Image (cartoon, rainbow, N blue to C red):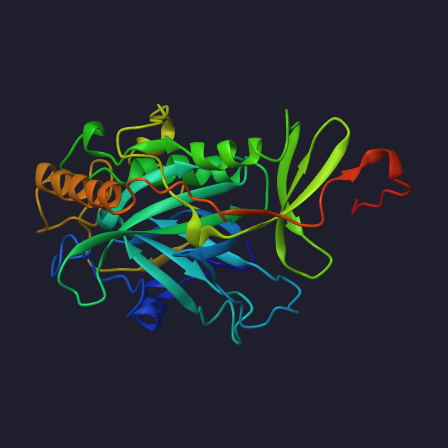
Length: 314
């Protein structure tokens, strides 16, 4: 979408340097290891709102005709691109770039639009491993599940097997918190409110609820809880659909399966042990926390009996 990946040239590969520093692409779990040879290809791209460590990323131009970020997953990395920045799509502004080896888990959100992606990071002093989350709110139906499947497949090291992929989990916290406000919700989705902010709207059989989300209070499931079985599907195959053109070229090595970004890095078993260590630290750091404050109900429920008009975009 929005021109990402069209035409030749360096594209994401050349633009990723702008993201160095925070989510800047250099691997935490495989420092100094090569990103791999061969052509970098976009395998999935989605329009999203993005929260990093619970804080919403701000677009360069909120009034742009396409006011959203792009999440692109390639055979080598994870990118967040701001298409409202000047020069797009000829010049891509990459605001987040993550090495796929640093992925620690995938948490399937409560609605059909949200996905929480765990990443290994370093503490503020750079002395210990910790886990941070990038939350994606997808704009179109089906994109969350496609991102989930592609990331799940790409978390597999090229020399490893399916058992070396990161765990996929269900977000049990949001559902539990929602039950405290809404009995038997029929529909939950994200949309912009009248103030231009992203809100969670929940419909019951007789009422409409509006919530503000505070993902800085959100907690993932325990590392061994709420596990989700995902179909390996076609996304696990080496010939997975490439959406867009080559974004960089560095030789002709091909990889039989999984991620192509683990050349000269840790072995699959070593990488799995590091990922386990990161998730267990999160378990210890958040033990006893309940995540209160993640959802705040705004203005109380609105009765559907008071509904007078319904307008929508065709």
